[in-house]
Length: 92
Image (cartoon, rainbow, N blue to C red; front, side, top):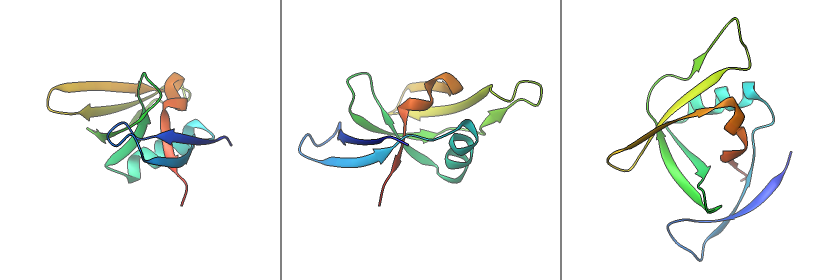
């Protein structure tokens, strides 16, 4: 488990503590339970995205996972299992 101190992408003064999911199963359960999740953007800052649909998993390939998301008004995307380090879980 790695603990990260990440600067907010919205308010540059706010720094919060997060951790990455330990496994693909934890990533799936966390994204299923929350409608909004925090992720790292390309500049290493925290952004909040909305999970925009069902988290997809495959029986034949357990390491294949897709989490659809929406950011803003027109931006859509999919997180795969290879991008597990971009999902942030807040530490309380």
